[in-house]
Image 1 (cartoon, rainbow, N blue to C red):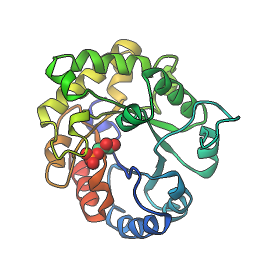
Image 2 (tube, helix red, strand yellow):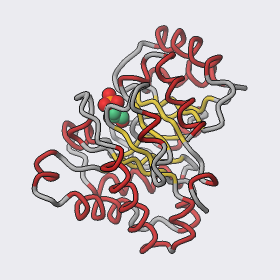
Image 3 (tube, rainbow, N blue to C red):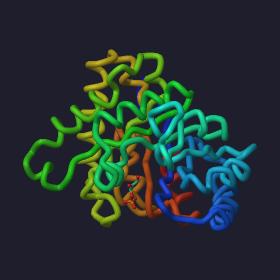
Length: 256
Ligand code: 13P
């Protein structure tokens, strides 16, 4: 299975933006602009926006995702949200291990693995984020680091479950900085991710895996990034908050 046969997924990560009221307006604006997309369109919204997003996206081609999930099934974890709670609400995707969570909320490769497994067990599709810092890139350890992040994140994930996994390569230095990885840099690391997944699960499984790039992807640079053979989609922060910009990226994936 090559790029044309893989599922291209353009996912917006709204991060901590948009009240439920604002979310409704943004989706009203976005939904008609992407209704003919040939790729999968996902909006990963704050927990407080999930209900309104699910109501607005019902019967449309826009899928709803959360931005985090707890790894325990239930219990005394004040403030946390379980995978079953998300699934019951109608959530389909969940971002796991975003670098902002690794940086600010003590996420580790081990907790990323636990969250990914909890999400999969509940029938959710985790979008597992990996990527290096600027210092790590300058030290020349990008590939080793990303390989390790992928291997640990997928520990205990079955080949069947892998079909529901998306991996997003998000270099930390490119997130929210306006400094995008070049298309060649994105391709190189996305290919390395596919290679390590191939080592773990075999070539066929690796060829079917959707690998996204994220980090300052926008309406101007999306087409070049998405044209690369191992870049199957994007995880978009800032540009996902503007319906018309996000729609241009969706259109670029459709063509890619
Ligand atoms: P930006 O597109 O704002 O750089 O954010 C990327 C990101 O972190 C998506 O998860």
